[in-house]
Image (cartoon, rainbow, N blue to C red; front, side):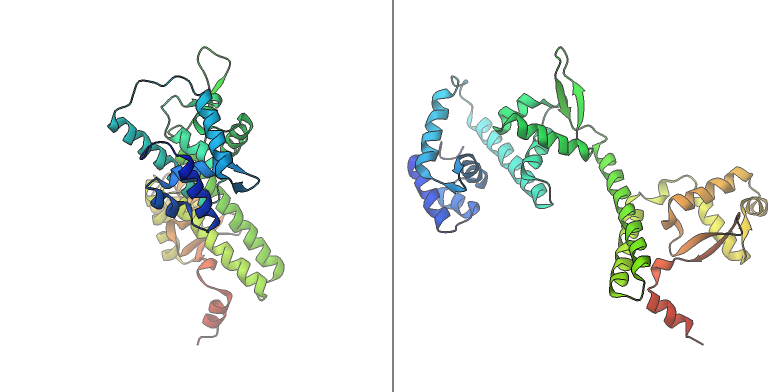
Length: 309
């Protein structure tokens, strides 16, 4: 750590600057220390919401007495690398916390993110973060609820290891996509309850359209769907026909097996954004037709278009 361990004089300065309203970054610059060093020092030694230099120094002395014999001396390069890793972990955890993730949960997540492939045990996290087992357990529970962490047996023991596997981002993407779709549906329902002509209904309608588009865009590029080309052909056929057609009629007209037309229609239902701004509608039970997507125009815009000659 640049400058060695914090001294009692350093801690007196930190306490005074905190009283003056200085932030951690400014205090770090004044002492020539990383911001993470100051934030850890204050978080570790704050009592009743305040940081007291004398209490912090006493706690540091106690920790030093309990500390195990020192390991072989690190090279300067190793020390710089360790400091860089620590600063990175703190910075990324802070950025995640700014998005709404609880600070401790963010620290646990980044610790697992930067761990080896076999993950970490709860005891490893307790030692690494210097927090209670209860804090680790609560954070792990939150991360599991968000599908960010998986449990795996620890070989040779009855304990478990916590791992961030390679599928984590796909799971998070899928979870967020589904959640946005549910928000869109709820907002649209609210717009119907309050009425499109009310202020609340208009706001909810706008919210529903926004989250619906977000969910569709997050559901992945339609270009990866094998039936997309066929789906666009179906849309072109319906527009050209200008009247409702059944799946069987589409298959016959296009020279396809019936299953191919059904697969194309199913792809459209699963990914409505394929033919945006058009929308697939079912009429007369089993026939399909094409209309303009209702969320592309506001009620006022549709009314104005209806008044045109």
